[in-house]
Length: 215
Image (cartoon, rainbow, N blue to C red; front, side):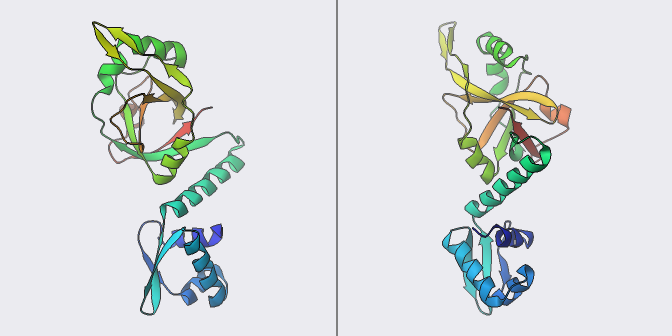
């Protein structure tokens, strides 16, 4: 895959909206002949990294989700190189308002006691909800939530089991909780932490945040 040409298209804005340019114009951006530029664009299209629409006198180019994910992987690789810690991995996305159920469930003694024991902190009664970007969704699928949270029965009501994995957001250690049954789609994660993260980090709906996955 031609990551350099893909990066140049993103720098021109093709990861956000369609960009109109001819092969001659793109050749100038990548310092190549128009023939080479045309071949590279065709190759990226065949690999489903970009979408192309032929226009009069040029073409409209947009990065696909696969193209954006490839650039995100490149970014994560550079982070590993320059962080000095090859184990660092990040999820990123925007803060959203949740369904409002987190405070109730986290405060239940049957769950709270397990969080304290298995995660090492007493969680603030509420969750921070993040809608992941496309690369984050793909990365999330490969994360093993290996900390088991058992279900229990209280006052003749059964509460389901789940799992979680540890994360760090800014300088706060927390965890992503993964209920066995959830109302949320796969692009949304719920984070618990010992503090109110919205207030501590001074963030609100729409804020972009990065979450480091702790192995």
